Length: 361
Image (cartoon, rainbow, N blue to C red; front, side, top):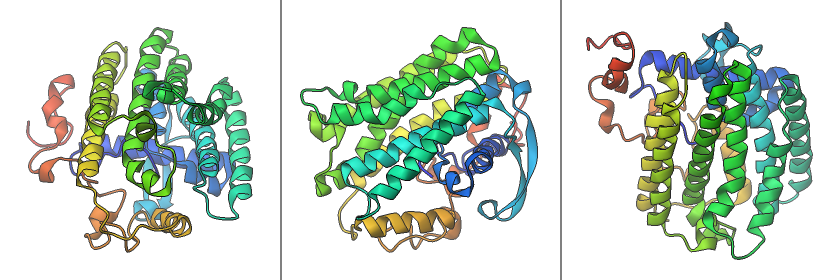
């Protein structure tokens, strides 16, 4: 799974973490029900935010159900957002279409393993068509999302473009998806603020991806927005901080029935993602073995199928404890300084009735 929003059980309220997991598992199961098990590979941490936004605006339109045991949850049943919810279907639609674009982008950049380009393009076409069908069911036109990858490739092949021009396609795609949650929830007054929030979130996601990939892209001679535009890591950090501030201001304009999870994911967790990415960028070295495309792809599948418990030998987490390797339990370098004492929820208990984590606050 990919994405910048990765809350962990260590610093999250138990109630909020369960709510986040309900959207994550709901997205995964909706992808499975709509396009088969292979489509679950399109599940990503950031896509579920769309489901969260829709539910926060209209809880009645987001039914839940109890899902059966799953290996990624330790074979435990769990409360999940039902596939009937329009918000999770929009999240699945966006995940499929953007994953298709990501596959095409990898092929265009030469990141795919030799001989797999045709298969990746076929899979991308299938996912894009499935996303279009799912989107049509809720009245969402995926054309603007589908064109994102093509526009991105076109910009990257040009010259004289600025960094913010390169992030624009991602910003516009996320803005369209965020804004449509207002239509689904019947709160049209939120559309403008949601679009603004989407633009800032898309910018942050694109920039953080560029920072994370900068060293690898340089080693492979691949395109990287920071390198291509001569943007320093310091300037990228400034742009991320400005966007995070703008995102927080946009969230304040939203009329939400329940804003707690939205504020945590798009406020606290976005800030953590920015800190985590730039901290890792400053600490990263080249002492470990850098894998080729084939081994990296195989390792990614193995890591995903074992929920992070298996790690390749070049992974810095290979010898860590199991609960630090597992996606569902590990803190992922969130910067919570050991998570000593009570969780973050208790810092914002004034926003709700009492504390949701039984800490006595």
